[in-house]
Amino acid sequence: MSAAGRVVRIGCGAGFWGDSPDGPAQLVRSGGIDYLVMDYLAEITMSILVRMKAKRPELGYATDFVSMVMRPLARDIAERGIRVVTNAGGVNPLACREALQAVFAEAGVDLKIAVVLGDDLSASCDRYRAEGIREMFSDAPMPASLSSVNAYLGAFPIAAALDAGADVVITGRAVDSAIVLGPLIHEFDWRPTDYDLLSAGSLAGHVVECGTQATGGVFTDWREVEGWDDMGFPIAECSADGSFVLTKPAGTGGLVTPRTVAEQIVYEVGDPSRYILPDVVADWSAVKLEEAGTERVRVSGARGAAPTASYKASATYADGYRAGATMMIAGRHAAAKARATGEAILKRSERLMHAAGFGGFAETSIELLGAESNYGAQSRATGAREVILKIGVRHPQKDALGIFAREIYPTATAMAQGITGFAGGRPEPQPVIRLFSFLVPKGDIAATVEIGGTSLVVAPFTPNDGASLSVRGSTSVSDADAAGVALAAVPLIALAHGRSGDKGDIGNIGVLARRGDYLPWIRRSLTEEAVRHYFAHFANGKVVRYDWPGLQGLNFLLHQGLGGGGIASLRHDPQGKALAQILMDIPIEVPAVWLDLDGPLAAWQEDVAP
Image (cartoon, one colour):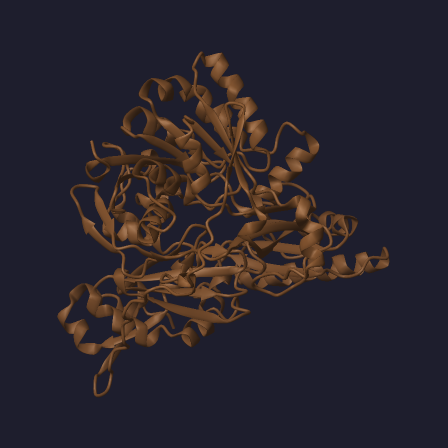
């Protein structure tokens, strides 16, 4: 069959290291897939893998991939002719290959393994530091010592490995969507200048890379989703023109609709008209979603422009130590008692630390879970009679936090009545790992593919036509004209759904209108300033809003909004997973007549946050 009429079915069986091994088994045995892809890596994962490799040189990769996925499925994968692509190699792809070869020998299968190398930039750190490389968001200088340094490679090395006959491709750090784009480049012979197609293939990867988040997982309207106990993992049925249909194995739980897919598309994206990836600058602002049958959504409309001349690189480094403790506090005025208890623990600990010759805490955090601390001034639960006190602290010296740790349990007899439920025993100080992101010239990096005893060099594509500087934009939506209109307020969730995530210390919140005529009114109330004020307890930097006309939505970025981000933050929600749900209660002004005409919308008027 010609490429034009062929459909390639790609299933994603893991969205993170620790995802259920049931996902790959489900897809291999009942998904009818051509490719099984798995995404294991995040910044925090890289730092963990570095520590593992330092202790045991044969580690440093996502061991679950070998032991819990490939060992039980090797024969099924070989018999069905399924090809596998994963970034499970982490910081030691060669060791991952060795372990996998042993599994294949044990299972009696002959599958050819390729490894993509070149993302590890550790050997170049001193040169980059001498050249004055700065952090791409904060402009901070490069730290003196780094734990890991890896470039986000693109999809063409993966495609080259498949071209060379690989049955399994193992990469280190590559952009998440590359594990899907690579197979599509190979199958459809896409070229480096096929920008719209590369953008579309990257979108397919972006949709499926987080596993069941694309099939009803973490959906705003959660009551519509059935079968949480047997969620279907996503399958992208991809065509040569770049369009694809998102679906899942028949008979599995979950929900595939334009709304569930839209929520995943807005997840962890910045400017939707200029999403910079290694192989393309993607423009997803005009993406179109259509029902294509039961549990099937067709995705089209992605566009792209030439890639930039740089790779993004992420380094991690140690910055002191952290510790945390949680306890339950019950009774009248529980929130006030909990805050007083937390403040007393910090005060007492610092006094004893000073007496022992240590300085004070570098950072502290008190959260009252159950009293809606994450809602800031919008909390409605200050009168709760049962809360969880969470205390987080940071200090340059580990021994200083040992003093904090031993002063947790004495609160049970020295402070408020109703303290109980100390979780996890005496807290053990842990290293604080921070992220340092920067750009490196693509010419500095030569990705290589090792397969069958040979090594193939895959040169990066760097355009010189200037097209990388611009992407075709889309028409944005205007604010509603409220002149002479009687207004009433409803919570945002009555008009929209959404999802939030993180990029380092930047939180993103995608807001998707439930109806097209709602969007101008949402846009009128949901300004950058309104969102910054609503999250004043979190947003330490600027708030930026982008229009997303194709999805009838908006995308917000909260710079310096996560307390340092997932690998450094002391917060209970360091990755901003709850931000969209919190924003769903912000009041939005709409024409009062809507409440008379729309019964379901009128019911929300009584639920507006004070």
